[in-house]
Amino acid sequence: WRIAVAQPSLECTTTLGLHPGKSGWAWRVRLRNTGSVPQRVDVLHAQDLGLADESAVRNNEAYISQYLDLLPVADSQLGHVVLARQNQSMAGGRHPWLGVACAQGSAAYCTDGWQFFGADHRLTGEPAAVRSPGLPSQRLQYEFALAGLQSRPVTLAPGATAEIMFVAAYAED
Image 1 (tube, rainbow, N blue to C red):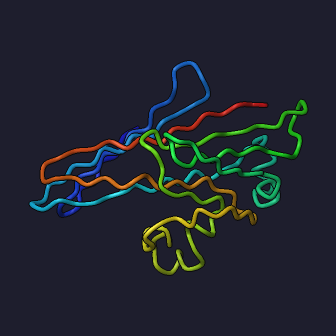
Image 2: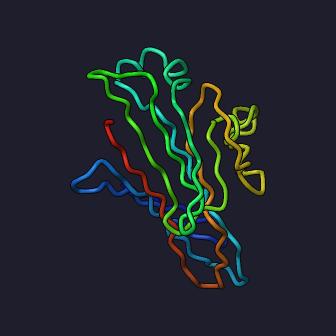
Image 3: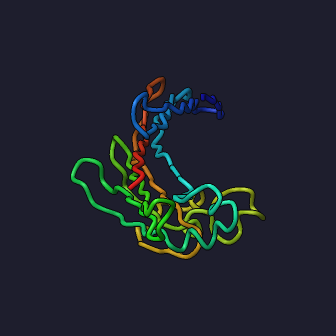
């Protein structure tokens, strides 16, 4: 899957790639400065989590979400990595988990949708995270489990490109 967006001085192409043999994926965000002055940019990634049997998620997502444990872990190369595990037993006694990271390193994280979207996103039409300088990097868990990461900033000279990649790995138990 691929989408391209052009702003007045920034071109962005986003590509989703699935791992050919494992339960994992990567979002690649390619940025190009089409302007005449350097630009300092970062990329936000938000992964809504429904780590449960499909019928359980469809029946009551908020209920399932409150049983997710999200653990931000600091890594010397990747920055913050968000690990999520379903603590309510699923079919066969499984406890699915997911790990999310930024390959180039993350500067900040969030663990709940309220931190990313805010209370007014339906009125403003954009997440609160877009309007703030950074994600809060605080562990919060209401009923909107979300693994959010903010890449480390990159300065793009005029005509320069950069790629930022967010990766995820899933395990059934």
